[in-house]
Image (cartoon, rainbow, N blue to C red; front, side, top):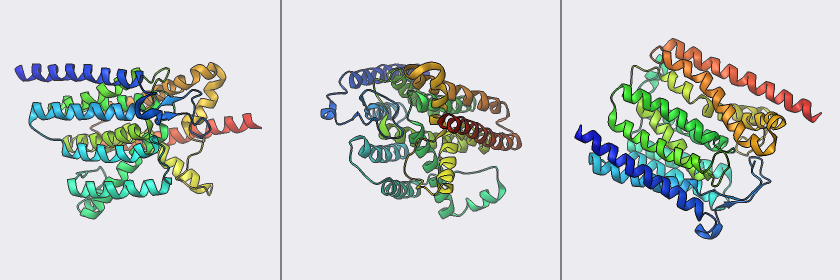
Length: 356
Protein backbone atom coordinates (compact mmCIF):
# COMPACT_ATOMS: atom_id res chain seq x y z
CA UNK A 1 0.00 0.00 0.00
CA UNK A 2 2.84 2.38 0.88
CA UNK A 3 4.58 1.52 -2.41
CA UNK A 4 1.42 2.37 -4.37
CA UNK A 5 1.16 5.73 -2.57
CA UNK A 6 4.77 6.55 -3.46
CA UNK A 7 4.16 5.64 -7.12
CA UNK A 8 1.01 7.76 -7.26
CA UNK A 9 2.92 10.63 -5.66
CA UNK A 10 5.67 10.42 -8.27
CA UNK A 11 3.11 10.24 -11.10
CA UNK A 12 1.29 13.29 -9.72
CA UNK A 13 4.51 15.30 -9.55
CA UNK A 14 5.50 14.09 -13.02
CA UNK A 15 2.10 15.09 -14.47
CA UNK A 16 2.44 18.62 -13.11
CA UNK A 17 6.03 18.97 -14.34
CA UNK A 18 5.07 17.69 -17.79
CA UNK A 19 2.17 20.12 -18.07
CA UNK A 20 4.38 23.06 -17.12
CA UNK A 21 7.10 21.98 -19.56
CA UNK A 22 4.57 22.04 -22.42
CA UNK A 23 3.11 25.30 -21.13
CA UNK A 24 6.53 26.97 -21.09
CA UNK A 25 7.65 25.72 -24.52
CA UNK A 26 4.28 26.70 -25.97
CA UNK A 27 4.54 30.19 -24.45
CA UNK A 28 8.09 30.81 -25.66
CA UNK A 29 8.15 28.57 -28.76
CA UNK A 30 8.82 31.51 -31.09
CA UNK A 31 11.97 32.44 -29.17
CA UNK A 32 13.47 29.02 -28.42
CA UNK A 33 16.48 28.29 -30.68
CA UNK A 34 15.85 31.71 -32.30
CA UNK A 35 12.64 30.44 -33.87
CA UNK A 36 14.37 27.87 -36.08
CA UNK A 37 11.71 25.29 -35.16
CA UNK A 38 8.88 27.42 -36.57
CA UNK A 39 7.07 25.59 -39.37
CA UNK A 40 6.11 28.18 -41.97
CA UNK A 41 6.33 25.93 -45.02
CA UNK A 42 2.73 25.93 -46.24
CA UNK A 43 3.53 24.51 -49.68
CA UNK A 44 4.67 20.99 -48.77
CA UNK A 45 2.14 18.20 -49.57
CA UNK A 46 1.61 17.27 -45.91
CA UNK A 47 1.03 20.86 -44.70
CA UNK A 48 -2.55 21.64 -43.61
CA UNK A 49 -1.92 24.70 -41.45
CA UNK A 50 -2.09 28.32 -42.58
CA UNK A 51 -0.19 29.99 -39.72
CA UNK A 52 3.40 29.51 -38.49
CA UNK A 53 3.54 26.92 -35.68
CA UNK A 54 6.58 25.71 -33.75
CA UNK A 55 7.60 22.05 -34.07
CA UNK A 56 8.79 21.94 -30.47
CA UNK A 57 6.49 19.22 -29.16
CA UNK A 58 9.17 16.57 -29.65
CA UNK A 59 11.67 18.50 -27.54
CA UNK A 60 9.18 19.01 -24.71
CA UNK A 61 8.28 15.31 -24.90
CA UNK A 62 11.82 14.00 -24.59
CA UNK A 63 12.59 16.40 -21.71
CA UNK A 64 9.51 15.06 -19.91
CA UNK A 65 10.48 11.50 -20.77
CA UNK A 66 13.96 11.88 -19.26
CA UNK A 67 12.46 13.34 -16.11
CA UNK A 68 10.35 10.19 -15.85
CA UNK A 69 13.40 7.98 -16.48
CA UNK A 70 14.94 9.61 -13.38
CA UNK A 71 11.76 9.07 -11.35
CA UNK A 72 11.64 5.45 -12.52
CA UNK A 73 15.22 4.95 -11.34
CA UNK A 74 14.31 6.40 -7.93
CA UNK A 75 11.29 4.08 -7.69
CA UNK A 76 12.74 0.81 -8.95
CA UNK A 77 16.55 1.34 -9.05
CA UNK A 78 16.46 0.40 -12.71
CA UNK A 79 17.71 2.29 -15.76
CA UNK A 80 15.54 1.76 -18.85
CA UNK A 81 18.53 1.44 -21.16
CA UNK A 82 16.58 0.12 -24.16
CA UNK A 83 14.08 2.96 -24.08
CA UNK A 84 16.72 5.63 -23.43
CA UNK A 85 18.99 4.58 -26.32
CA UNK A 86 16.25 4.00 -28.90
CA UNK A 87 14.23 7.09 -27.94
CA UNK A 88 17.31 9.34 -28.01
CA UNK A 89 18.55 7.97 -31.34
CA UNK A 90 15.32 8.35 -33.29
CA UNK A 91 14.64 11.72 -31.66
CA UNK A 92 17.98 13.03 -32.95
CA UNK A 93 17.25 11.70 -36.46
CA UNK A 94 13.87 13.43 -36.48
CA UNK A 95 15.34 16.64 -35.05
CA UNK A 96 17.47 17.12 -38.16
CA UNK A 97 14.39 17.98 -40.20
CA UNK A 98 12.86 20.04 -37.38
CA UNK A 99 16.03 22.15 -37.29
CA UNK A 100 15.78 22.47 -41.10
CA UNK A 101 18.92 20.46 -41.75
CA UNK A 102 18.00 19.08 -45.15
CA UNK A 103 18.77 15.39 -45.65
CA UNK A 104 17.59 13.20 -48.50
CA UNK A 105 14.69 10.99 -47.25
CA UNK A 106 16.47 7.87 -48.52
CA UNK A 107 19.64 8.81 -46.64
CA UNK A 108 17.66 9.46 -43.47
CA UNK A 109 15.96 6.07 -43.78
CA UNK A 110 19.30 4.32 -44.27
CA UNK A 111 20.73 6.04 -41.16
CA UNK A 112 17.68 4.99 -39.15
CA UNK A 113 17.97 1.39 -40.38
CA UNK A 114 21.66 1.19 -39.40
CA UNK A 115 21.13 2.70 -35.94
CA UNK A 116 18.07 0.57 -35.15
CA UNK A 117 19.78 -2.59 -36.42
CA UNK A 118 22.74 -1.98 -34.11
CA UNK A 119 20.54 -1.14 -31.11
CA UNK A 120 18.14 -4.07 -31.59
CA UNK A 121 21.10 -6.42 -31.84
CA UNK A 122 23.01 -4.83 -28.92
CA UNK A 123 19.98 -4.58 -26.60
CA UNK A 124 18.73 -8.02 -27.67
CA UNK A 125 15.24 -6.73 -28.38
CA UNK A 126 13.17 -9.49 -29.92
CA UNK A 127 9.64 -10.69 -30.49
CA UNK A 128 9.41 -14.00 -28.65
CA UNK A 129 6.40 -15.50 -30.39
CA UNK A 130 3.97 -14.94 -33.25
CA UNK A 131 0.75 -16.76 -34.13
CA UNK A 132 2.33 -18.20 -37.27
CA UNK A 133 4.24 -21.46 -36.88
CA UNK A 134 6.67 -20.89 -39.75
CA UNK A 135 7.58 -17.43 -38.42
CA UNK A 136 8.16 -18.77 -34.92
CA UNK A 137 10.69 -21.19 -36.36
CA UNK A 138 12.44 -18.41 -38.27
CA UNK A 139 12.55 -16.19 -35.17
CA UNK A 140 14.95 -18.67 -33.57
CA UNK A 141 17.50 -17.51 -36.17
CA UNK A 142 19.13 -14.40 -34.68
CA UNK A 143 19.65 -12.47 -37.92
CA UNK A 144 16.06 -13.04 -39.02
CA UNK A 145 14.78 -12.08 -35.56
CA UNK A 146 16.74 -8.80 -35.64
CA UNK A 147 15.62 -7.98 -39.21
CA UNK A 148 11.98 -8.80 -38.46
CA UNK A 149 12.02 -6.64 -35.32
CA UNK A 150 13.72 -3.87 -37.29
CA UNK A 151 10.99 -4.03 -39.93
CA UNK A 152 8.31 -3.69 -37.24
CA UNK A 153 10.02 -0.59 -35.85
CA UNK A 154 10.36 0.97 -39.30
CA UNK A 155 6.71 0.47 -40.20
CA UNK A 156 5.39 2.03 -36.98
CA UNK A 157 7.93 4.87 -36.73
CA UNK A 158 7.33 5.93 -40.33
CA UNK A 159 3.59 5.38 -39.95
CA UNK A 160 3.58 7.75 -36.98
CA UNK A 161 5.51 10.35 -38.97
CA UNK A 162 3.26 9.90 -41.99
CA UNK A 163 -0.06 10.59 -40.23
CA UNK A 164 1.30 13.48 -38.16
CA UNK A 165 -0.23 16.11 -40.40
CA UNK A 166 -3.46 17.07 -38.65
CA UNK A 167 -4.08 18.41 -35.18
CA UNK A 168 -4.42 15.44 -32.81
CA UNK A 169 -4.49 12.72 -35.47
CA UNK A 170 -1.32 10.91 -34.37
CA UNK A 171 -1.62 11.85 -30.70
CA UNK A 172 -5.16 10.54 -30.25
CA UNK A 173 -4.25 7.33 -32.08
CA UNK A 174 -1.22 6.83 -29.80
CA UNK A 175 -3.35 7.51 -26.72
CA UNK A 176 -5.84 4.85 -27.83
CA UNK A 177 -3.08 2.29 -28.57
CA UNK A 178 -1.22 2.88 -25.30
CA UNK A 179 -4.49 2.80 -23.33
CA UNK A 180 -5.24 -0.66 -24.73
CA UNK A 181 -1.69 -1.81 -23.91
CA UNK A 182 -2.12 -0.39 -20.39
CA UNK A 183 -5.38 -2.34 -19.97
CA UNK A 184 -3.64 -5.59 -20.95
CA UNK A 185 -0.70 -5.02 -18.61
CA UNK A 186 -2.84 -3.96 -15.67
CA UNK A 187 -4.97 -7.05 -16.20
CA UNK A 188 -1.79 -9.18 -16.12
CA UNK A 189 -0.49 -7.33 -13.05
CA UNK A 190 2.59 -5.95 -14.87
CA UNK A 191 2.57 -2.91 -12.60
CA UNK A 192 6.08 -1.53 -13.19
CA UNK A 193 5.61 -1.49 -16.95
CA UNK A 194 2.11 -0.06 -16.51
CA UNK A 195 3.60 2.90 -14.63
CA UNK A 196 5.75 3.66 -17.66
CA UNK A 197 2.75 3.44 -20.00
CA UNK A 198 0.85 5.86 -17.75
CA UNK A 199 3.80 8.26 -17.95
CA UNK A 200 3.75 8.14 -21.76
CA UNK A 201 -0.01 8.71 -21.76
CA UNK A 202 0.55 11.71 -19.49
CA UNK A 203 3.01 13.25 -21.97
CA UNK A 204 0.67 12.59 -24.90
CA UNK A 205 -2.34 14.10 -23.13
CA UNK A 206 -0.35 17.19 -22.10
CA UNK A 207 0.81 17.64 -25.70
CA UNK A 208 -2.75 17.18 -26.97
CA UNK A 209 -3.89 20.07 -24.78
CA UNK A 210 -1.62 22.36 -26.83
CA UNK A 211 -2.24 20.75 -30.21
CA UNK A 212 -6.00 20.07 -30.34
CA UNK A 213 -8.32 21.45 -31.56
CA UNK A 214 -6.16 24.48 -32.45
CA UNK A 215 -2.42 23.82 -32.69
CA UNK A 216 -0.14 26.00 -30.61
CA UNK A 217 2.74 23.56 -31.16
CA UNK A 218 3.47 20.56 -33.40
CA UNK A 219 5.24 17.29 -32.61
CA UNK A 220 7.64 17.68 -35.52
CA UNK A 221 9.53 14.72 -36.95
CA UNK A 222 11.41 14.37 -33.66
CA UNK A 223 8.17 13.87 -31.72
CA UNK A 224 6.53 11.52 -34.20
CA UNK A 225 9.71 9.43 -34.51
CA UNK A 226 10.08 9.41 -30.72
CA UNK A 227 6.58 8.14 -30.00
CA UNK A 228 6.61 5.82 -32.99
CA UNK A 229 9.64 4.09 -31.48
CA UNK A 230 8.09 4.10 -27.99
CA UNK A 231 4.82 2.51 -29.09
CA UNK A 232 6.77 -0.08 -31.10
CA UNK A 233 8.79 -1.05 -28.03
CA UNK A 234 5.69 -0.90 -25.82
CA UNK A 235 3.92 -3.36 -28.10
CA UNK A 236 6.87 -5.77 -28.32
CA UNK A 237 7.29 -5.81 -24.54
CA UNK A 238 3.54 -6.25 -23.97
CA UNK A 239 3.52 -9.13 -26.48
CA UNK A 240 6.42 -10.80 -24.64
CA UNK A 241 4.92 -10.22 -21.18
CA UNK A 242 1.51 -11.56 -22.24
CA UNK A 243 2.08 -14.72 -24.32
CA UNK A 244 -1.60 -15.69 -24.00
CA UNK A 245 -2.65 -12.62 -25.99
CA UNK A 246 -2.70 -13.22 -29.74
CA UNK A 247 0.17 -11.46 -31.53
CA UNK A 248 -2.34 -10.60 -34.28
CA UNK A 249 -4.29 -8.59 -31.73
CA UNK A 250 -1.27 -6.28 -31.52
CA UNK A 251 -1.24 -6.13 -35.32
CA UNK A 252 -4.87 -5.06 -35.11
CA UNK A 253 -4.31 -2.13 -32.76
CA UNK A 254 -1.33 -0.98 -34.84
CA UNK A 255 -3.20 -1.51 -38.10
CA UNK A 256 -3.79 2.15 -38.95
CA UNK A 257 -0.11 3.11 -38.58
CA UNK A 258 1.00 -0.02 -40.43
CA UNK A 259 -1.49 0.16 -43.30
CA UNK A 260 -0.80 3.83 -44.04
CA UNK A 261 2.87 3.02 -44.66
CA UNK A 262 2.36 -0.36 -46.32
CA UNK A 263 -0.37 0.80 -48.70
CA UNK A 264 1.46 4.04 -49.48
CA UNK A 265 4.63 2.09 -50.34
CA UNK A 266 2.77 -0.36 -52.62
CA UNK A 267 0.73 2.43 -54.25
CA UNK A 268 3.79 4.53 -55.09
CA UNK A 269 5.68 1.55 -56.50
CA UNK A 270 2.64 0.72 -58.66
CA UNK A 271 2.49 4.37 -59.82
CA UNK A 272 6.24 4.27 -60.53
CA UNK A 273 6.97 6.96 -57.96
CA UNK A 274 9.62 7.03 -55.25
CA UNK A 275 8.10 5.54 -52.06
CA UNK A 276 10.38 7.75 -49.95
CA UNK A 277 9.01 11.13 -51.03
CA UNK A 278 5.73 12.57 -49.66
CA UNK A 279 2.57 13.19 -51.64
CA UNK A 280 -0.99 14.25 -50.79
CA UNK A 281 -2.81 11.00 -51.53
CA UNK A 282 -2.80 9.32 -48.13
CA UNK A 283 -6.09 8.27 -46.55
CA UNK A 284 -6.12 11.10 -43.98
CA UNK A 285 -5.55 13.64 -46.77
CA UNK A 286 -8.33 12.22 -48.92
CA UNK A 287 -10.75 12.19 -45.98
CA UNK A 288 -9.84 15.83 -45.26
CA UNK A 289 -10.97 16.78 -48.77
CA UNK A 290 -14.35 15.19 -48.14
CA UNK A 291 -14.77 16.61 -44.63
CA UNK A 292 -13.82 20.08 -45.91
CA UNK A 293 -17.15 20.27 -47.74
CA UNK A 294 -19.13 19.90 -44.52
CA UNK A 295 -17.13 21.71 -41.83
CA UNK A 296 -15.16 24.40 -43.65
CA UNK A 297 -11.42 24.98 -43.47
CA UNK A 298 -11.26 26.16 -39.85
CA UNK A 299 -12.86 23.06 -38.32
CA UNK A 300 -11.92 20.40 -40.87
CA UNK A 301 -8.35 19.97 -39.60
CA UNK A 302 -9.29 18.70 -36.14
CA UNK A 303 -12.60 17.13 -37.21
CA UNK A 304 -10.66 14.95 -39.66
CA UNK A 305 -8.51 13.67 -36.76
CA UNK A 306 -11.57 13.07 -34.59
CA UNK A 307 -13.51 11.19 -37.27
CA UNK A 308 -10.58 8.98 -38.36
CA UNK A 309 -9.81 7.98 -34.77
CA UNK A 310 -13.50 7.41 -34.03
CA UNK A 311 -13.71 5.02 -37.01
CA UNK A 312 -10.44 3.38 -35.89
CA UNK A 313 -11.84 2.86 -32.39
CA UNK A 314 -15.13 1.42 -33.69
CA UNK A 315 -13.28 -1.04 -35.93
CA UNK A 316 -10.63 -2.07 -33.40
CA UNK A 317 -12.43 -2.20 -30.06
CA UNK A 318 -14.51 -5.36 -30.72
CA UNK A 319 -11.24 -7.29 -31.14
CA UNK A 320 -10.43 -6.60 -27.47
CA UNK A 321 -13.06 -9.20 -26.56
CA UNK A 322 -11.20 -11.81 -28.62
CA UNK A 323 -7.60 -10.91 -27.74
CA UNK A 324 -6.91 -14.45 -26.52
CA UNK A 325 -8.28 -16.04 -29.70
CA UNK A 326 -5.56 -16.22 -32.42
CA UNK A 327 -7.91 -17.27 -35.23
CA UNK A 328 -10.41 -14.46 -34.72
CA UNK A 329 -7.60 -11.91 -34.28
CA UNK A 330 -6.05 -13.04 -37.58
CA UNK A 331 -9.37 -12.77 -39.37
CA UNK A 332 -10.04 -9.40 -37.76
CA UNK A 333 -6.69 -8.00 -38.89
CA UNK A 334 -7.23 -9.08 -42.50
CA UNK A 335 -10.78 -7.71 -42.35
CA UNK A 336 -9.33 -4.36 -41.28
CA UNK A 337 -7.00 -4.44 -44.28
CA UNK A 338 -10.01 -4.91 -46.56
CA UNK A 339 -11.92 -2.12 -44.77
CA UNK A 340 -8.96 0.23 -45.18
CA UNK A 341 -8.71 -0.55 -48.89
CA UNK A 342 -12.45 -0.05 -49.48
CA UNK A 343 -12.48 3.27 -47.60
CA UNK A 344 -9.36 4.48 -49.41
CA UNK A 345 -10.69 3.57 -52.88
CA UNK A 346 -14.03 5.22 -52.15
CA UNK A 347 -12.40 8.44 -50.92
CA UNK A 348 -10.01 8.47 -53.88
CA UNK A 349 -12.91 7.98 -56.29
CA UNK A 350 -14.75 10.91 -54.69
CA UNK A 351 -11.65 13.09 -55.05
CA UNK A 352 -11.16 12.18 -58.71
CA UNK A 353 -14.82 12.95 -59.47
CA UNK A 354 -14.54 16.35 -57.80
CA UNK A 355 -11.43 17.19 -59.85
CA UNK A 356 -13.12 16.43 -63.16
